[in-house]
Amino acid sequence: MAASFILRCMNRGCEFGSDSSILVCENCGGPLEAVYDYEKLRSRYTGVPSDAGSAGVWKYAPLLPLNAATEAVTLGEGGTPLVKAGRLGASLGLRNVLVKDDSRNPTLSFKDRKSSVAISKAKEFGAKRVANMTAGNAGSSVAAYAARAGIESYIFTIAGISDSKLAKLLSYGAHVFRTTAPTKELMTFVDSVSRTYSMTNMTAASRYNPYGKEGAKTVVFEVYEQMGGRLPDWAFVPIGGGGNLAGFFKGLKELRLLGLIERYPKLVGVQGEGCAPVVEAFEKGLPPEEIPVVQDAHTIAHSILDSWTPDGDQALSAIRETGGSALGVTDDEILEAMREMSSKEGLFVEPASATSFAALKKMTAEGKVSADESVLLLATGFGSNQPEAAIQAWGNPPTIELDVKAFGQMVR
Ligand SMILES: [Zn+2]
Image (cartoon, rainbow, N blue to C red; front, side, top):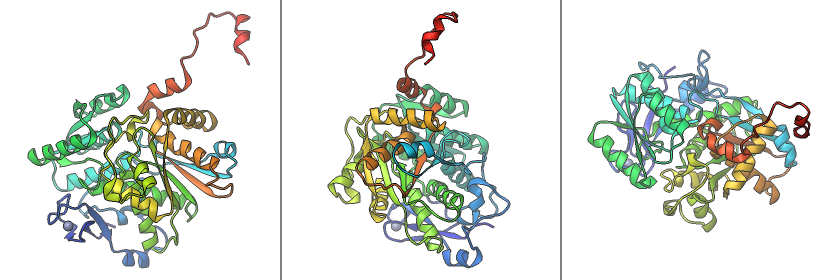
C-alpha cells in the first residue's frame, strides 16, 4: 500500500500535498516533515503498519512518503540484527544491553536507510543530479543509491576523509570534491550549488531535505518489533548533525500516535568531547536555537565531526522531551569502547558507533542507569569505514620468526 501523507512545515505548520516536489517550506523556508493519517492507519493495522511482502526499510511502506507509481530504489537496507550484548552488559553490572547493529547495511552505515528513501523521492521527481555534504558515510550511501537510480552524484567531503570511505565514494561513480571548509560554510555552499545547478540536495539534515528522516525512523519500528512490541528504557544515539536522533524521535512519536507505546525511552545523545555543541547546550540549559558552532572541532569519531549541527535543535528537544541526557566522550574512551565491543561481542564498529557504549559506561559509573533497566546502543557504522582507528586502538601485531620453541613466549 502506498502511503497517504502531507508535508508540514515545522516552523509555522504550513501544509503541502504529497505531489509537491519542494524540499523546504516555500512560504517561510522552514524544514518540512511528512505527516501521515495516523487515525486511519491505527484502524487498519494492529501493529506497526507494514507490507507483508516487503522486508527491511520498505516493509514500512505505509509510513514512508513514496507515491504509488514510484518504485523504491533499494539495496536491501534495514532489517539489521538486534544483538544481545551479554558480556558488555555484565562488565557494567547491567542485565539487558542490546546493540542495534545498523553497521550491517549495504554501504556499511545507517545512512542507507536515509538514502534509499531520499533517492527514491528524487527519482520520483525526475532528478538528474544530486548533491551531498559528508564526512564519508552519508556521501558513500547517497552515491551508491544514486548510481542504482541512474542519477549523477556530486559529493563534497572533508579533506581528512579516510581512504576506505574515499574508495567507496569513487567506486560508486560520484564526482568527489574535498574541502577544508567548516561544516556550516560547506553545507551552505552545497545548498547554493544545488539551487544554481539543478541538483537535489541530499544533505542529511531536515532543513535541506525532509526525506532522510523518514528512512532513519524505521530503525525504531524494527527495534519495537524485535523486542516483541516493546522499547528499551534507554536509547544511546551518536549525534553528528543531529539528523539520526531527530529521525529516531520521529519514529517514537509515530509509534505513540499509532497507540503502540505509552511512554518514550530516555534518549541519550552522544558526541566526541572535542566536538560537542549539543552537549554544551544541554548542560547549559540553552534553548535549541542557541546551540553553538564549535571552533577547532576535533574527535576521533570522524563520522560525527560536525562543528555545526543543522538538526541539533530537534535532537536537543527530543533529549529533553524524553527525560534523557547528552554527554561527550574522549578519544581514549572511544578507543576503549571499540576494543570492548569487538573483542567481547564480535561487533567491529567505527569510532562514532562506539561512542554509545563509551557513554553508557560513564552513565553507569555515575549510577544513572540501573541493573534491571534495558539499554539500546545504536551502532551506526562498520569498523572498516575508519580502519586506522582500529589499528590505533590495538597497535600493530609483531612480526615473528618461524621458531616453534621461541614461540612459547607468545602463548599466554
Ligand atoms: Zn512554513
